[in-house]
Length: 271
Ligand SMILES: Nc1ncnc2c1ncn2[C@@H]1O[C@H](COP(=O)(O)OP(=O)(O)OP(=O)(O)O)[C@@H](O)[C@H]1O
Image 1 (cartoon, rainbow, N blue to C red):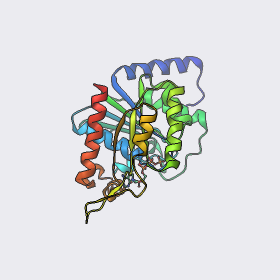
Image 2: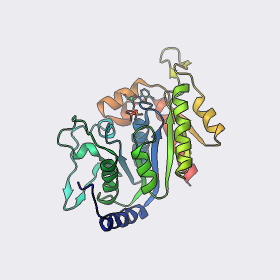
Image 3: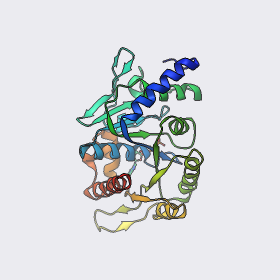
Image 4: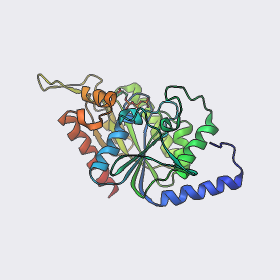
């Protein structure tokens, strides 16, 4: 993987990226201000739900230091093949292709100690050298915060729009406000906010318990005149789904309905 490239090589790469992006209808980066709020879970579920509805989806994990997408989809031993200079995406189902740095590592548990330019190089390579098919959606799972990875996506993926995931606590919402302002600064439109871990529906009494509070995501969206795409409850099924890689199979029907509602909102916004 080359990271020091001449201007001419960069121009050729930019052309390849443009050629690929022209064949993608919607590019969506899933961001969060804070770590651990469920961004990868949301990105993965969005990709699976959309692909189950027949859309051609590419799921790209650009969280180089903590890639989670492969694990969430049960692809812990994921190894991406190459064909000449091209990286072949993993075909998760008929309509969903997956690419993660995890698939290119010899030792999946070894930490990647990379500085900005190397990370920027690998993200650009994922956009230029992967043999993606024509896509309806490219869903990009970005690490939390406003560092090199989301900045590279914003500057490289022309037409990219953001979905921002938060949890209801003020400490998470404070970081979301930074993500919103980041998007404004880099001129990346925001499709909307999602509040994850928004209460727990007790399986015994059926009541909603607002363990981490709820409603902060909706209020923040309103304060910035952004769309609120929906909320997802705390669901032990999400943890089981993530830990076993069974994606949506273990979710409660309530969570599935909520996720479908978010997908519907998103499709409506994009239509
Ligand atoms: N709605 C939910 N209910 C219960 N557990 C959840 C929910 N959403 C996410 N989780 C769990 O929280 C943990 C973190 O989720 P996830 O990896 O999606 O977060 P992240 O924001 O992408 O994290 P990172 O900052 O590492 O990128 C996982 O174990 C996941 O299963």
